Amino acid sequence: MDKILVTGGLGFIGSHTVVELQNEGYEVVIIDNLSNSSIEVLDGITAITGKMPTFEKIDLKDKLEVENFFQRHNDVKGVIHFAASKAVGESVNEPLLYYENNISTLVYILKELKKLPEASFIFSSSCTVYGQADELPITENAPVKQAESPYGNTKQIGEEIISDTCKVTPSLKAIALRYFNPVGSHESAKIGELPIGVPQNLVPFITQTAIGLREQLSVFGDDYPTPDGTCIRDYIHVVDLAKAHVIALGRLLKNKHKSNYETFNLGTGTGSSVLEVINSFEKVSGKKLNYKIVGRREGDVISAYADTTKANNELGWKAQLTLDDAMRSAWKWEQIAKGR
Ligand code: WQD
View (cartoon, protein in one colour):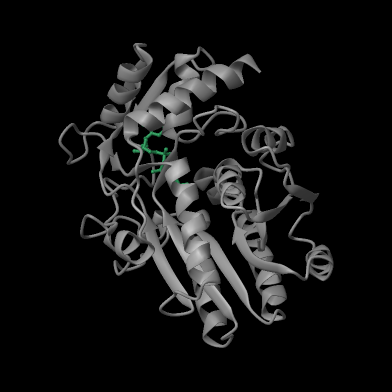
């Protein structure tokens, strides 16, 4: 089976995607610089699939290292590119760190793929490119809006770099996957989300509060123009998301693509409010969550959820797991990881 490079393959979404790639029979090589992940994830992946992926600790900012990797692995047929910094708040304070890490690494990888007779490239993008969309649910044709953060800007710029490169490189086939909100963990609880420090995202903060790592969850505002006043998001189970990557890669490897640069929204198509997520967690865990309503968080959009028609029809993919499934698996992972 084809050899696939997964950059950032020890990260949250990357590790779940490696599992699904191995389940599909691909040979996987992971590059990760361990800046936001840990080497134990490799054991978790191996424990699930029974196969240890090849791992190389490389910082993709090192151009020569990237060139050297592709010389040694000139049989790579596809790349799924997760490696990037992704903390919205941090990107506001450290813009150059984000532009260097998220943009230069993408350029170095694309330069190597241009040299190959044929290459398939899957890019980890984000619904953040839409900002606050004017119409809901959000389709892929929704206008890309002024980014709310340098992080979001790097995703927009990344998509443009890929699109421009594909226009002049017929041998390069690419898909940008625009994730909504990835949550949950693999059912085995051998891999999951490993936020470093205080979690920025809702679900890990919920599970860390429930297990006693955090005192109380702050709900950022309940005065939004939504049914219960809290923001609405499209929470997609990370295993559904991982499976979509394998399907998108297969589309390119089998030349089923309609153009050599495509974008797909990956969400459930259902919006859930913060309070609905909390209720789901309390239901599946049987625990009462300690939270309080505080002021709004700067930069939050009111509501974002996907129109999944294109992914359903073109990829033949549809999210199968529910918000309750995601909360149940996130809680199971927190209890086991905490015990770690
Ligand atoms: C979800 C909702 C918060 C924490 C971000 C990135 C996006 C993507 C996913 C990378 C919001 C509320 C949160 C808390 C809260 N990341 N919340 N208390 O902001 O939708 O998306 O993560 O690709 O690019 O922007 O996710 O989980 O931070 O917030 O009330 O302690 O939960 O206000 O309404 P977000 P989130």
